[in-house]
Figure 1 (cartoon, rainbow, N blue to C red):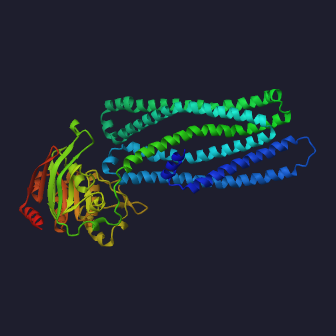
Figure 2 (cartoon, rainbow, N blue to C red):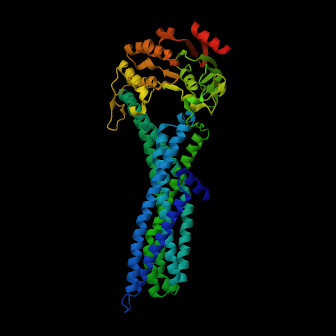
Figure 3 (cartoon, rainbow, N blue to C red):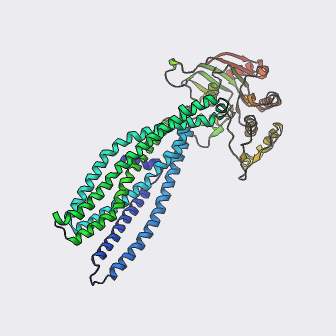
Length: 560
């Protein structure tokens, strides 16, 4: 339990003091509720008797006011803590995904990421109201049992024995539902994966009705049906386990009504008070029993979040705050890959792609074209050059500085990149430095782009095609003035005029500014515009062509 709470507090970012305050609220609320019951029970015992009840009325009124005020502030505190916990869990997951090595993030399916941020974060945070409700009911039941002990110790011992027996039976039965719950969530996650396929492949499905029917019937619908069946079975089993509380309550009430006076020789008026207390406790006993399955689900969500965080945070990258480009040597002359190798996953002998023994020397200010067939390793090499993947063997260097974990964030910050699957953020132009805006506006005019902005002043990207998104990202790249650039299949989504602009205007401008540029391309008509042409095949660099000027730059850098 101690380990569970320590993990819970670490995940949610809540302080132990906050939890103690809520525990105090719960216990106080339970005691006050039982106190109100005691006052009512004593008042019922006085019915028909000529006794002064004004002090009971006053005590009940004061207790009720205190109870209402306490519940208001307790619920406010609990709700704030629950929402804060959910927010903190989501933020930690998102930051972990950002700080994790790219490969670890890419290996987690998108639908599982969404499930963690929605279902699991909510269930995990939902442990707070369930724990507080459980403690409130526990305090109420305990206080009411204390009142019962004052009325009749024998009756109280019988009630406690039945309650303990019910708790033991519940613990024995609930363990059987946990495996079914995990299986239900696993199958539901698989169904979310098929739902992703449907959303991402809607065009393909519409163009192939026969396959669409098969996919929906055999994959999507069959998986969702199986998830539903497991969930129904799990929920019914949960409910059946919860009936332990119902049986315990009715059994106790029957014992009080039929046996206490006859067999235990409890006075009739005491039996009446016991029945009243048990009727009052019914809701709280049921609440306790019903909250336990929800807490089991919360514990499962906490386990899933912890497992994913362990994956993402195991090799979290070291943040070098505020260093950015300044962390790199300002007068660097050469970017080098020395015998770099990389593979996707373990067991590369079984067919996983490998980039093997890549060595390159790229002088500052060179324009490098990376070419090769599909699957030759161009994108993998680009991610290594960007520092998004870490070499399994070999090293990436700027002059004599090895780009390791302490340097990688600063190194990446020196790059402006436009990927083939570019993602444009809804950013505001106010984020651009004032001095960069004229260059951005000039590039936008040259690229024939007119941006639309939402009511919040942020860029509206919904109407932009993939080619337009690449052009907008390129305009930002020009405005950022970073010394290194990478463009991945930039011309693949462009009209001929913009292809010509890219090779004849855009790249020469970057070269004139002294930037080092990497271009992944298939446009063999423009290969002559590169200072270096790096050709890949089967995960190896099979040829490097250098223009005379670039060869001279390499020689000079080596001599320096």
